[in-house]
Length: 285
Ligand code: NAD
Ligand code: FES
Image 1 (cartoon, helix red, strand yellow):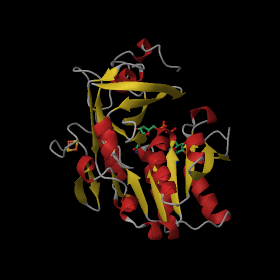
Image 2: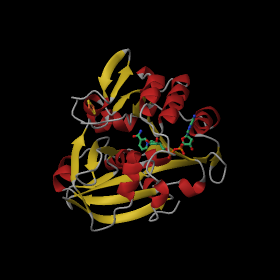
Image 3: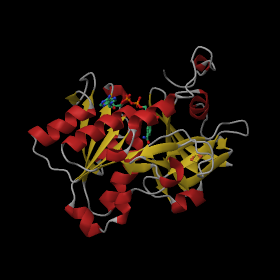
Image 4: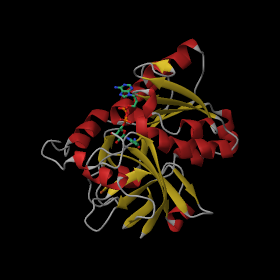
């Protein structure tokens, strides 16, 4: 069993949980993910690792309630335990393959959308520990939905934007990418986009327009997480790749986002016939 030792509500329907999992914390690297199981009847849910401490043996996950299982996770409290917490799975970010000298010569831009902000944090934190300060665009629909802004400001140069203009640049992450490059004259050598699939598609197109190589972290549907079932397959450069064992990060310029979005929506249930989310009263709506 894997005990929740801290729970914070970050925004409506979004929680952060610190989970005791010493073996996972020991070998976790930025960019990897875990698969969690609330109880023996639960569904296996993949979640990107948002922070970890090998010294204290914990791993942090951030979950947005979007269906039955994610809501069930968010209803768990401090002291409760996950039946299973498997990981670290997938590959660490490609940036870890570069030397400190190479990294320090690069200007790296992260584009974080909504809940995708938390998985950017371990990468920015790791870069800071190598002496590299990166730029992070954080986009949210409105300012109350921002998460991890204070944490991110400690490790990176942060640029905020909101769809409704309530804070920072008024517009989507792609508008702010254009502004930083075209108006502010910033030159980026590498981009990493993490967030909703549609955002990653358009962030990649915008980065490509500016000639910036871009990695994206694909949150494909997963079942076993070990490369056996094929549920997480995506097309990258015309070839079938398995997100769980070959990703989750892929070259955005090569990803077939339209196919990935079709597959992601394949099992989306009609909310009217699905579990009554209104039963959940423990989180602010
Ligand atoms: P959201 O819909 O509020 O979008 C966040 C930001 O992304 C927006 O503010 C906007 O700036 C940008 N964006 C959205 N659509 C865009 C478009 N068409 N063009 C340009 N920019 C666009 O995000 P949310 O509700 O927090 O996201 C939830 C989704 O993120 C879930 O589907 C979840 O599965 C996914 N997610 C992905 C990862 C990952 O590893 N890729 C991690 C966590 C969450
Ligand atoms: Fe089954 Fe990746 S989740 S192959």
